[in-house]
Image (tube, rainbow, N blue to C red; front, side, top):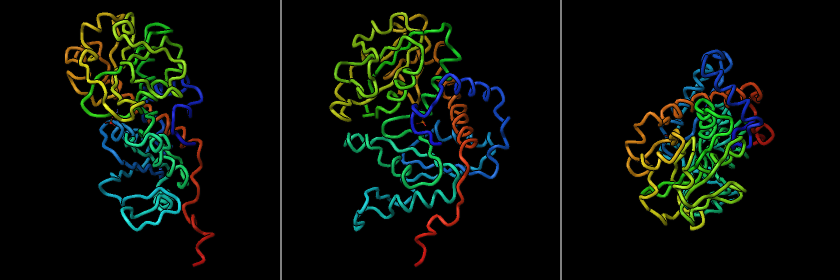
Length: 329
Ligand code: CP
């Protein structure tokens, strides 16, 4: 079993229930991961994903190895048949096979480059490990998705919702740097599995990949979208159509206390890290309605559900002899 996208969740309701159970007794399955190793490979920075996933693994009794691949590893080549006479030192074929010998689960963070849409959509790094590793793979945020985050978001909303079918708004907000669409994509996919009134609001031209948003409601008027909302989930993403570009920096999209007044006393959510007074004002972020810290706390239980399911479902293949048939010379 791999955890690559929200589509790997067979029942969101059951997974959320399981996570909430784990949250009550996080050390209950401390023996499940004994003598198993989680390898965490980072091609990009992280605070929450790194620590919460590590904590989840430790709660399950696993050993954890962490590598900042970009600064500490060899530069990888992903193309089949490449003549490696320039930048890259190691092919994904060897790298993934080698890491598979040391680890029982490999978790990978590799963001979108935001230059080549086709390349980002092909998920070169994640796909390379999926193809060439021999152990389960977990997506710790790839070019197009962040399913651990959105599972944590679902857990957080389940804890805080006061009605069966809440109104949930995903709102774009400005940001000085071009950011990937991954968090928003997975949030949309997760919301499509929920019974909720779901609305996406962003400036015209900032549409996400329509293959992901499908028939989700889009409202270009942020104030209108906020009316009677129960949850405001804010996130910046760079332009998907004019790929990776910042085409809008309008500070009118910043989430303010005035805008929150339009809602049904909505909870404020953000995956963090968040730029204060750019994405959201201090007043909103520091208010009682902000649940961003609990949302980050739930990253541990989201990761723990995923690791637990993998440990229970995937017998670890033998580590020796991965290249047996090719080892004559
Ligand atoms: N939300 C999230 O993924 O945080 P980090 O980038 O700090 O891991």
